[in-house]
Image 1 (cartoon, rainbow, N blue to C red):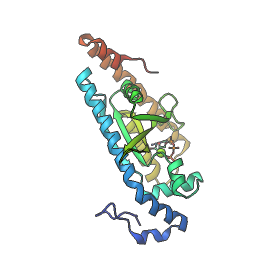
Image 2: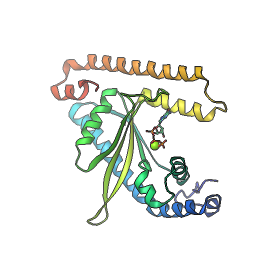
Image 3: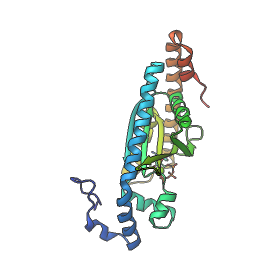
Length: 240
Ligand code: GTP
Ligand code: MG
């Protein structure tokens, strides 16, 4: 049973709490008191990223972002992650150890766009990079590619800031397509992947990466002729 009522997403069903241990129940009740801060942080981060895309459109006549998705982790998934990682089942442990309660996916058009957006975000004084994992430079054995960054963002109600982590997964459209389908295949199929399936999925991820690089080459070739240096800086910077 889900903890949330579909009609009233903020109202959790007390009945659903019965299946949890006492520590888990305590954590859920404590978490629901502070969940709003994670929503505020997510809203602010969304605005920052959307403004950046708008700024790029105005300055470079180029929109690096294709679309943005965001979500707050459900209490069920928080409990699952704390159990899986073996962290203490307390609200302090959640605050210290779990960085992806507020989560965003920023889907970019080209690989370079990802690194330009990250470079611009990393310079902003109102957010701070806490953690970075680059699965584009070092893909996972499955073939998964994305850059994951946890930003700390300060939200204010009065003079003292509350610092909340927000995890952003940066991907191209092709990387997002692969990750979505691979995730669905992994969780919806009743059987484990065979070694052959795994090899194929890894190969498709590498093929899509090749397509990403080639599409970007065409895009740069088609557009460099009539652009100024700012735009060149934005789009043609070498992929690290
Ligand atoms: P979690 O406890 O799962 O959040 O792990 P983590 O944050 O320590 O690890 P990681 O950096 O691997 O990020 C996990 C997230 O990345 C997952 O929730 C997925 O969204 C995505 N991800 C990681 N590996 C894969 C993969 O092999 N396939 C797909 N489809 N997604 C992946
Ligand atoms: Mg995660």
